[in-house]
Length: 103
Image (cartoon, rainbow, N blue to C red):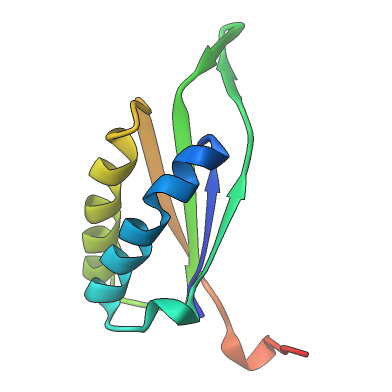
């Protein structure tokens, strides 16, 4: 059920880190990784007419305590920075599962 969307990383890098990323989150939240979705959206960030190296990771899931979110973010950060990205932003969106329908 958790949905992870990665922006600002090369798709090859996302593919390379995907197993470790999902296994890391799986261990922390105790949910099987086959319940996750991982999506890569290629994008480029700019500041002052220059391309900047930053990655945004959005995790949508049912509401979890801030401590759990912080643990996940801190575990993901070194995985992404290991590919040479300078800044990593991890943020969480709470889903209302009562209003989610799968067909």
